[in-house]
Each structure stands twice: as structure tokens, then as C-alpha cells.
Length: 136
Image (cartoon, rainbow, N blue to C red; front, top):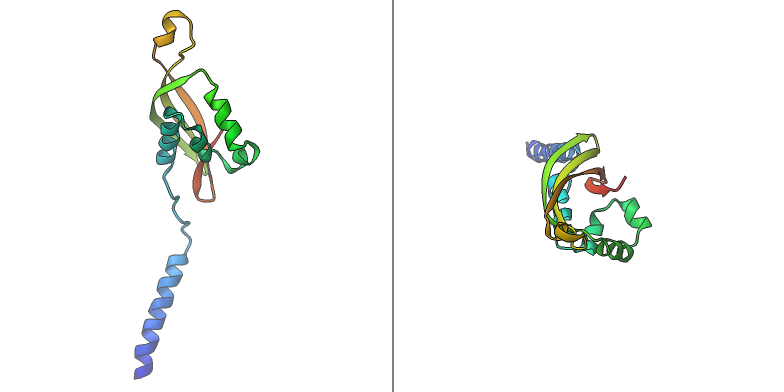
């Protein structure tokens, strides 16, 4: 009789462990939406060194953080706002559209202080259960 009480909990424990390991991959640490907006918020703050961390592993391997941040800081555009418009995914690749408001302080005459707006299309890829911005 004692064997039955010992065997049942062991079978239950093994069953729970096997079901936890079954087919479903671990969810991404952050959702794609969160990562897209986190990157854009860093761009708005001009924190290019941290925004570099959202680029794909391959991009980061080929482009040192300092060089990327320096090149981004030299751009004449100043982003004012960003709003996620759409996401269209096919497996581990997503096309993301972000509506961006920006200003170009070095623009001539009345354009200098004009807030302009445009849609920016981005590609994000899932690698190792996380989403990464891809410049391609």
C-alpha cells in the first residue's frame, strides 16, 4: 500500500515537468510593440548609445556602439514624437510602420521651426526569442 502513495506523486511530478517542456517556445522577454516604442523613445531622447542595443546582433557586431552613436548624433534631424501605426508579421519578420514627427533645425528659413511628419517603415526580426531592429 505504501508504494502506491509514493508512486502517484512521482508520476504527477514527472507529468508536470514534461508538460512544461512541451512544444511551446518561451515567450519573448518583451513584445515587439514594447521594443519598437522603447527604441523610438531612446531616439527621441537622443540616447543613441542605448538605442544601439535594439539593433540586430549582426548589426551590433559590425557597427561599434560609439561609432553608431556618433553618426546618429551628427544627423541634422531632431525627432519630436513617434507613434506606432501598424505591424504586419510573417513568422519571425515583421514590417512596422511608425509615424514620426521631426524638426530639422538647420533647414532654411521658415522650415527651421516647422514640425514635419512622415511614416517610417522598419523591419524587425525575431532572433533567440527576442525582437531586433534590422536596418535592411
